[in-house]
Image (cartoon, rainbow, N blue to C red):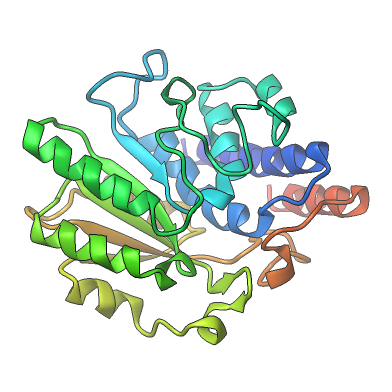
Length: 271
């Protein structure tokens, strides 16, 4: 099972590169490679979801608040069989359902339109609150970035979630310490993120965002009663590809043929 999961994650990583190379446009590759491990484990092992009935009312919801990394979500949706590989040919084309930022299409597994940072997490919190009011038994996951956490709206909804005891909510914080304008500590140092979230009333877990066992173990746990949870995923921007790792310039960049082939070679070595 573990080897199968590793192979499927590797397939999604290669798919991210292929989608980015085929479109021949600048793509948010660095962040996509920092979240693909946790997204894969969530979708392949933990998300309560009927792939044949994507509008099932009691499905778990996942909202990619860090919307610019949509290519990672699309790659995982293909791996799960929710969408077809051939549909990726239209990525970033006019009238495509698969844009640089997600556009809501529940039938394709895209729960929300996101991209304006700090907004998707608010939508997730609202859905969690609505589920409590309606007494619906499903869980809401949302993934945010550490750069996104510079947005004040993130902390407004954190207060709301804790106050309303939303134990049906899990926030995954992709802490890759790098954003569009540079390294996160230089742009706006957020200090000790774990202590911050604890002070806002969240149950906090910290994991290596590229360790499958740690990701799996964290996602398998239930939230403490009456507490929302945040999983701080310590990750590496551009993970697994030497020329991308911890390089702010790969926040958003175009893959040349040379870089594409080199990236694939490096991923193969990790097999």
